[in-house]
Length: 79
Image 1 (tube, rainbow, N blue to C red):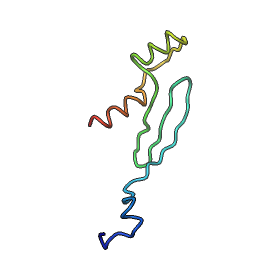
Image 2: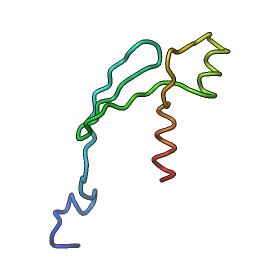
Image 3: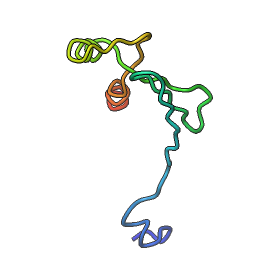
Image 4: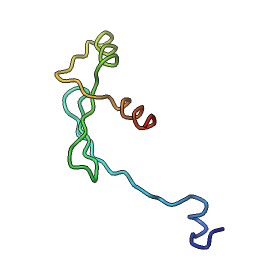
């Protein structure tokens, strides 16, 4: 055991970051996330195939297309 760490730290590791965000819901699927540490908000919504699916199944239409949360998940693990 490394003498620099307590027993709990040795078992669980060190917390290096805590993500803090506030989500604002707008009309339809549009949401804006304010992420601590970033100046600009991040917009989420629907586009492409996701929008086409919900449009054909439920008649969903959007004024402006935004990346889906799925796009950010995929981009984050691909990087």
